Length: 149
Image 1 (cartoon, rainbow, N blue to C red):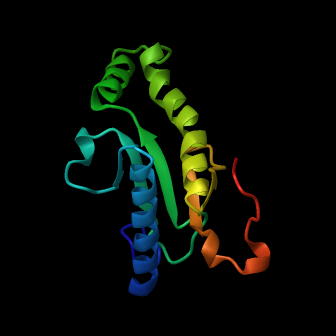
Image 2: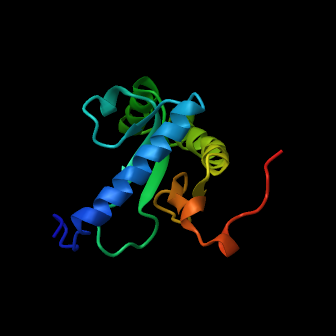
Image 3: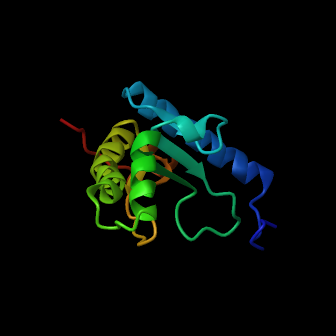
């Protein structure tokens, strides 16, 4: 059980999800983007693609997701504006705006690497990218047959 009372996936399932997350990080790094797994020791001081594994047994969405994180200075400016009572300040909107712009790029990079990725359909995390697996995991009849230009 998780700290919130949800059943955890088996160790084998979590291992497969971790393997997929590692492939996502590798694909993004090969494209030249900073990418790292959630929970890495120096995560708070990093900007780039944060790859998250969902350890729950019952998924409401994808087993792996990716979100873009702006620099710590940018995030600090947003928090300072909120604390100062300026929720409409450009610094508050900037991280979300950048995350939404990066979403399409992340999806394109992952798809070109053979990783099934799509937009998040959640109001709580609208800038996230959902990752479901590899094209090679699909039966041949369901695999995309297009070749990107």
